[in-house]
Image 1 (tube, rainbow, N blue to C red):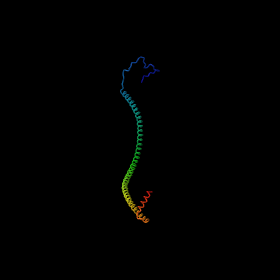
Image 2: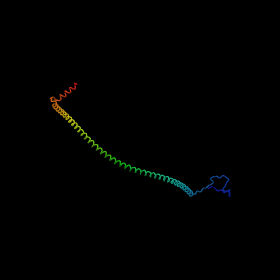
Image 3: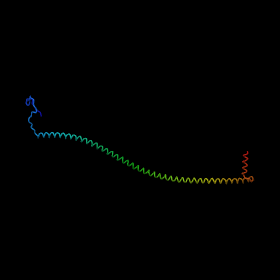
Image 4: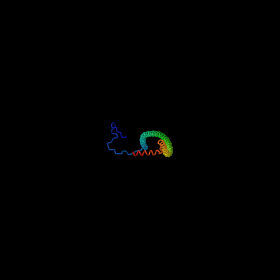
Length: 193
């Protein structure tokens, strides 16, 4: 606190025109309790300022933490939703895989039956080929027999015809010459003409 000079009522009190030598106090009386109280007061002020600053930082940190927790909660909700979707997709995929597995079993059974059927068809084809070959040999044998019999019958018919025609010729002409001589004479006559 500075020196108060009342210029209105006492203008000259505590005023000097000389230069004041400093320090002008020769004795100093120290009151240690006052100093301790002042120091304690300064420490308290410093502590209050620090506590106020910490409170301000704590409030700021609390707001930041609350924002971070909100973000984390939102992220957790999103992760839960995503996880739920993945679980649903997994269930759908498992159902599809089960259906696919059943279809594959059915297809495998059908392929197995088809292979058995094809094996049976191949066996029957082999048997059919053997039967066809046997029938072909039998037909060739019958054909050769028919050919031989036809030739034999043709020769017999030809002989029978010759005998019958000779007999009829003999009856008609009264000649003992067979018809072959007559036919040969007709052919010679035609060649000469």
